Image (cartoon, rainbow, N blue to C red; front, side, top):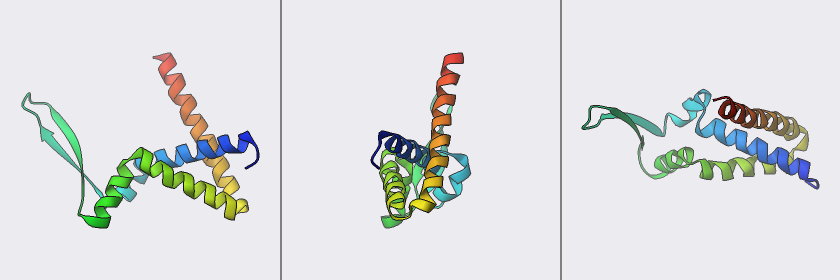
Amino acid sequence: MDDPFSFVLLCLASFRLTRLIVYDAITAWIRRPFHEWTEQELPDGSKQVFLSFKGGGLRRWFGELLSCYWCTGIWCAAFCYTGLMLWPNVFEPLIMLLAIAGGAAIMETLVSKWLS
C-alpha cells in the first residue's frame, strides 16, 4: 500500500463490508443468532422496537460486536488489510468490488439528500 489511491480503496471496502455486516438485510442471518428485536408499546400508544442480545458470555459479546459499527469496522478493516497483504491475488478483486459498492453507496446517499 504505497499510494493514497490504494488506501482510499481499502477505506471504501472496509466501510462497505462493515455496513453489509452491521445493517444490511441480506446479512440478517449472521446477526440473528445473537440479536433479538422486541416491540414494546409506549404509554402514548406508539410502539418502539428494542434490540437485546441473546445469551451470555461469548454469544453476548458477538451480539454486541455485530451491533456496533465502530467495533465491527475495526475487524473488517483488519480482515481486508490482512487479506490484501497475505493473498493479494484473491483480495484485490474483493477490495475493488467492495470499494466500488462503498463509493456508490456514498454517492446514492448524497444524491438522495440533495434531491429531497
